[in-house]
Length: 68
Image (cartoon, rainbow, N blue to C red):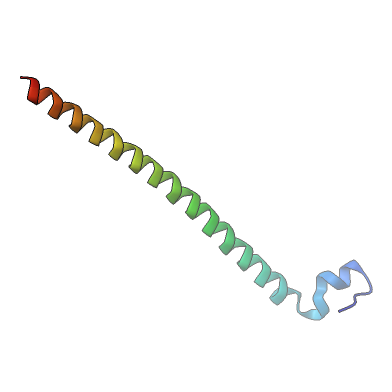
């Protein structure tokens, strides 16, 4: 599609609200997915770190029980 000017491009032949609205909704959805994924990744890393630390503490406690 060929446009005469930049303002014609932005107007999208009279369909600007539909076109730019679709782009806006798509961009917002992708941004939300990205933020959500990064947040879940961070929470999972913390959970794994805590689980490893807990298992290490349990192992050390069992080691101390056997020496008493």
